[in-house]
Length: 467
Image 1 (cartoon, rainbow, N blue to C red):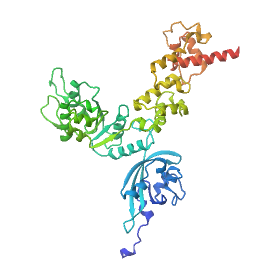
Image 2: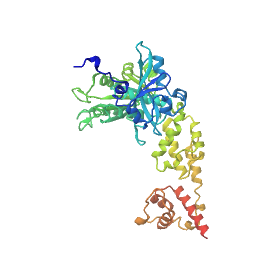
Image 3: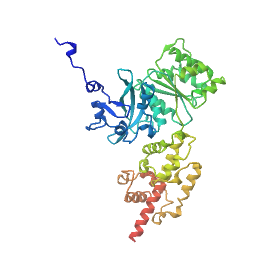
Image 4: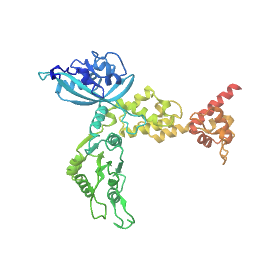
């Protein structure tokens, strides 16, 4: 029988390959000392990574990531001697990915920190994912990193931030990455529900509880059982309802209006407001005990003006979700510069509206400065655009039809639009079918009247060239 001393000890490679996630050991000089197979696989390389700088492999930088505006976990670990967690943008096989990094110090026999051990978990998103938080500035990456730490817990989260910053997106993000993601997320907008209705909406009621209560109603809190309850604009709740909500949070039980007994509910609460709740507490408008109960984990969502470097990426994200918006990606540099120079008092909501209006006004052409309704009355901008649609300027071959009413019957199948960009022949035949009625033609083709006008001008030019 072999003695324990005769059994060979596992090597460093043996140990780090026990990690299923990418794991790497880095010295204080940013050089990679060892990495496991998952790390090699993550970067899709068979090259020897040991000896290279971590910032060279992960970011393709020529200097530490802290010099490029990112939080460096190595520097934090070496400075504090404590573990840290941070979200980074890594370049994996030519593609950028969000990576959650957990880093810890590795000590020698004398207790000195010689290395850092780092585990990476890639955060996967689809572009159309409603939980996607767009941006790569340190501000938004720090926010996403915080959200990933709190999401798997059961803690109550209190989201603060100006109107339009995307507090609902943050709440969705937390629910999506929580252990309750398979269960419902119920939204209560306290600013949209009248004060007389909100109690019955939240708690439900029994049949006969009041005049008009002809049957039992399940409240929103009960509907969220097993999932997440997102209470938006919680500052609008009356003091009486604040007291009842506090009881739910502390006891985990509710009673319907008109009911005689309490029953348990398993609900995680996320609350949000754009008001100064601390000031409301001071003024007696918000219960202090409820505030402290809600603010177990406070989250501040920064306004858009504090992360202007993300504006172009957010604008292009909205463009991908708009019909034909992808045709404007990437944004023209002058348009991006104008957007980035604006402070957006309405935050992301205002940016989305500006982009949607610009796509409509551009009508198939590239978005230019004249299509941006920044610091201008959008109604006036629209009026100016419509001034171009002078009926006397329409191509002459089609003017003879312009006052003719559209036919009541549907066009033959051959005229049906097959793509977002109809060919000129289809446009001509559709217009002839509708006797030159532009609105009906545009609606059938799925384009705006302004875009139809541009097509007709092109047809006129072609016909003039043939003549």
